[in-house]
Image (cartoon, rainbow, N blue to C red):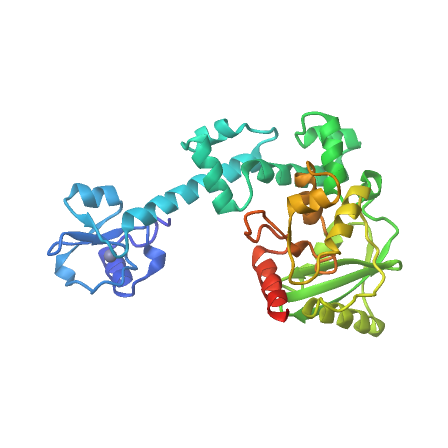
Length: 353
Ligand SMILES: [Zn+2]
């Protein structure tokens, strides 16, 4: 919360009068005549100002003899906020750590039992602590690849236990072979164009072999940078008029994915990723598969996590329909370009069949 705000009676009374939800958590107001305390956003009838008392915590209000309002449930909200803070804190610990932290140790650092911690983390962040740590390691690893003198150094400085496991992960998570990636697609020319679609901005980028990236974003300025970051040494050029047909084709396909897409693709990925992506391309619009379904289809039922990271490494949104892979429980699951976009895509495909 922001302790600098809502410190004066004046500010607090104003927040109560406006049902200002951004003041929730900063203070609570209690009504002397009813014996009940509320959050500033509570929709209950505005009390007489003379009968109002303020507290900064639920405990303090209760110690003064007030009961929590059943309507705005101040204690429930403060619990939720407290838990969110703990999970955010755990995320920071993971991000800042150079080594893998054991679950029980991490849970201990935020005062939660390992079981609760794991469940809450998954619920709030969307992935398990281990997956979260894996992503951060992998991101660090990619960064290090570009600055470290050798691949082995990169592996160790990213905090992987042994070079063996890092090589496995790296194979699953990097689109290109390490040496090519380290060169950042040096000598490759990539042409791109931007367009609007129902999911926001879309960038279509192509090498002379075919389309190499289709990505979504909220902002047309950042999208070319996003592609450049993937291929840092590639020469990135905005396309001329000839490219308009291609981008139209892509946008049409995003909007009606049941049509066939015959534009050549330059799919950069490991053999394993290519296998995963091949399975994904067989999932028809309106259908979904779970990560374990995909692993099984490939004849590698144990490779569920590797399948998930291959989906996350996809650079060709919609054309390789990684959005049609959902978690086993039927939840939407993660999406590189945002869960909201994934949800929208799945809904629009449902609507069309
Ligand atoms: Zn209330």
